[in-house]
Length: 200
Image (cartoon, rainbow, N blue to C red; front, side, top):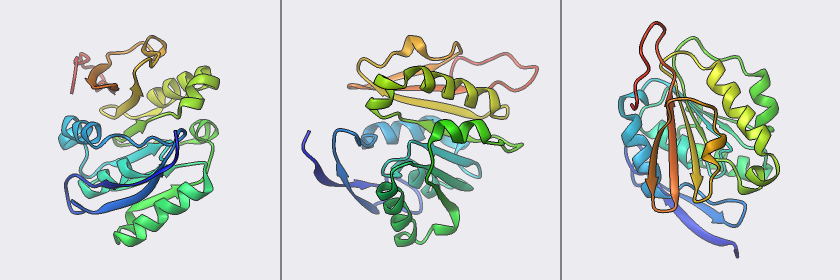
């Protein structure tokens, strides 16, 4: 896939209509706008006033969408220095820098050290194809670890495309949604002493 320069649009909220300049290539395929819009529609009232963690942040579009829709803050985890710098550039351009924190890190090591907050968070994981091909066991363990750490009523969402090994996801009540070749798998950590719900 040849690199293509494109723009991603923030769908709703205070930054609605603002555009991110980015280059799409084989290792960076941003979440399609339709899927991003569906994700935040499903999360709904779970977004405002909660932290949003954009794992494998890439362009940062999901974390910026969360900020736009009222998230208390967004944490962008991205190991690529250039992509991380672009996210910071957009945070400054959109004048929301105080609400966003970019961490240049390997997400697998970060997850081991992460100390979760006491209140619910929203976590979004869209792993690169290379990680699914070469680090699948690590990705499954990463997902399991985050599910284990998050406080009750938090959400963990995994995005994949056709052929995603959903049978390898940790056993849980996943709400799966299909959008063309894209899939969303959403899990809500049950409240203590409550019966798990089938969906949000």
